[in-house]
Amino acid sequence: MLQTHPSPPSDFIREIIEEHIKTNRFQGLVATRFPPEPNGYLHIGHAKSVCLNFGIAAQYGGTCNLRMDDTDPSGETREYVDSIIRDVKWLGFDWQNRLFYASDYYEQLYQFAVHLIETGKAYVCSLSAEEIREHRGTLTEPGQESPYRNRSVEENLDLFKRMRAGEFEDGAHVLRARIDMGSPNITLRDPVLYRIKRTPHYRVGMKWCIYPMYDFAHCLSDSIEKITHSICTLEFENNRPLYDWLLDELKVEYHPQQIEFARLNLSYTVLSKRRLIELVEGGYVNGWDDPRMPTLAGMRRRGYTPGAIQNFCERIGVAKNDSIIDMALLDHCVREDLNERAKRVMGVLRPLRLVIDNYPEGKVEALECPHHPQNPGMGSRETPFSKILYIEQDDFHENPPKKYNRLGPGREVRLRYGYIIKYASMVKDERTGEIAEVHCTYDPKTKNSSPPDGRKVEGVVHWVSAEHSLPAEVRLYERLFNVPNPLGEKEDFLKFLNPKSLETISTCRVETSLKDATPGSRYQFERLGYFCVDLKDSSPGRPVFNRIVTLRDSWVKVSGVK
Ligand code: ATP
Ligand code: MG
Image (cartoon, rainbow, N blue to C red; front, side, top):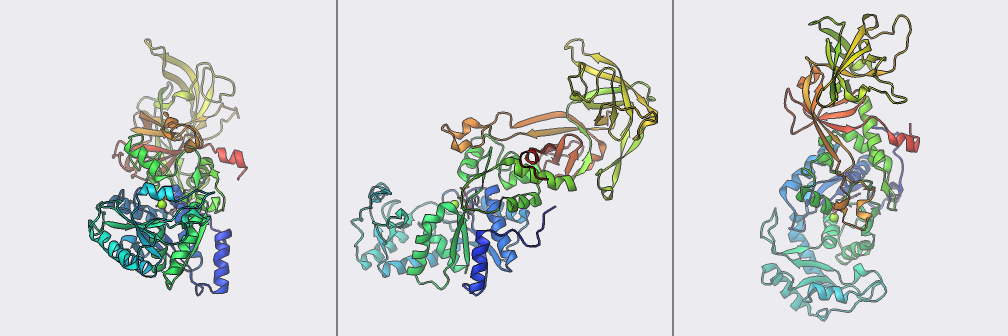
């Protein structure tokens, strides 16, 4: 369940906003936006920004826009736009009729650029990209002015117009702001505002061959949309003076406040679209929605719930300094949510035949099994019990080690919701020496109840009836990387991919009630974890399950969270 706080925990961003409301800075309004560039699928880091922007708007009775920040034609696609729309909706947020595209503002942005040229605040520079870099200076040395810096307004207007008309090759000219090559803030050393790029754009095709840079397009798009608080990640802190400079120079009516917060980093994965593209294109994972991916599409397919992700984003909060969040906290939030909502069922991952010698041949009993032990309101189902069952291979041990509270020679265990059984004998495969079958006897007086003589048994094991169970495939997942910070290592991050991140078991057996389980539905397999019916590969009669998360909660141990 999503935790609801009477008043959500306050953070420095909300403090700023409340101050603005108090002082009537934006007539008391709050308007935010989530501005992804459609050059990849959204990941859990984006979810933090989505929850923050939409959450703040909802909290203060404001609005939040969804804006495709599509100002760079290379790498942007309609497929990515569609995936972003699907994922933000799935997370539980609604932008109503406020879906915008920066590419719809190209003409307006062009006119703003012309205005800057006219006021002497921008010029066409014909240095190469490399020369511009050389002229930029360093943190300790000022930059050098471009020899083109003092072109006349007329010459600049003419060149810029011809840039737009397609008269020049990529890289021949750029438009730069005329600010200060000696500024201690390198961002202000005559930043590039427009470049020539003859690449078809997924929305406007070849209509344009000059494209605005992020810094130019972003603040103006915010202003056009009358955004009040432009919330972004910390790496844009040095760009804030440029954000403000552009809006001031252009004397726009709406001047939003940029506020930066620390981006989410998560252990044992990578949160960077560029890296995620490498994983997808290199075939290291099976697409953007591979259940091991930190993408929202991957998490949805794996079986994470939107509520768990929202709860996670709320718990990590927002701060001003970078840190790496432990993946175990995300697992904890997922478990906490599923513990309440997931129906309990039985499935056996690695089946071992178990024959109950004294159970009548051909008899089938329907055992009543509750869907949730603590919540009778969730109802129950009847599970067939018969002479031949499957139990988990590792629930039987020929020479039980210490503290092994399962079945072994001379031992008794309870079958979950069924009878107490006692070991009788075993059959080994003559060729391999592996245990092929275990024989037991059952005690008819113990059907889902304590034995009359009060004797204790070793433990409880899950099972399915051999004849009545369904074959199923189960996919088990581990961390995608085997080091906490794969991008912080000296070697290429791909070297740290965990070769055991996916294990497919195709010989599982699950109880018959799962025959009609719908793709996307989630269950707890007793003693094994939470599982989700795969959205793509599952078919009726042969379900495919993704393990969402195991039952053991290491986060509770680490943090003492209850
Ligand atoms: P990446 O580094 O993965 O390519 P990006 O910042 O380039 O991400 P955008 O599409 O520009 O991706 O991001 C849209 C919004 O999401 C931006 O406001 C950005 O600040 C925010 N965002 C991106 N990554 C994170 C993250 N790890 N944590 C919090 N917010 C993020
Ligand atoms: Mg970006």
